[in-house]
Length: 144
Image 1 (cartoon, rainbow, N blue to C red):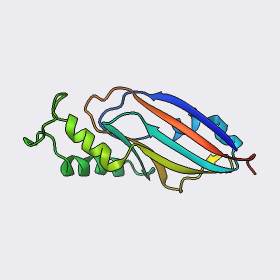
Image 2 (image 1 turned 45 degrees about the vertical axis):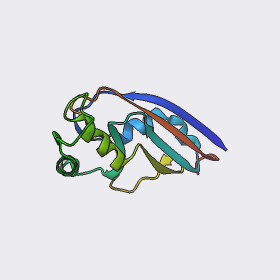
Image 3 (image 1 turned 60 degrees about the horizontal axis):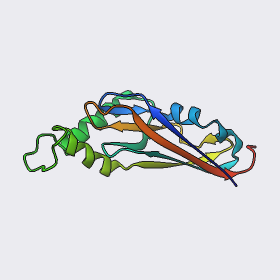
Image 4 (image 1 turned 135 degrees about the vertical axis):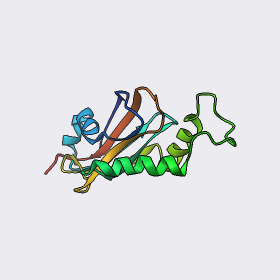
């Protein structure tokens, strides 16, 4: 079994849902050495998250932002944690709803995502800054 791991810093992005699939694949060229395996992408932050969804139509990502902004509104007077501004606690809640990691099968040296699937960085802060992700892949053999 082969195991590879890399940590990369993603550039700062505005609030919203951003495709990072290509950045993930480029960061770990050793994926090409795996015939079968798994790849975990983990974000080391509590106010941003990761998910897998539609990669073709950018309106899907806009609709994600609209939905989560309605579902977890800012400026709720019942929030106790607001030290870093009105987007702070909602960002933590959104990140918990979506999660801090995704798992993707590796097949023949590539991420085995579906035709219309991509990895999203979900930035829940207005000014979240650069984000660090750790990509770990493991598996067997040379690609077919």
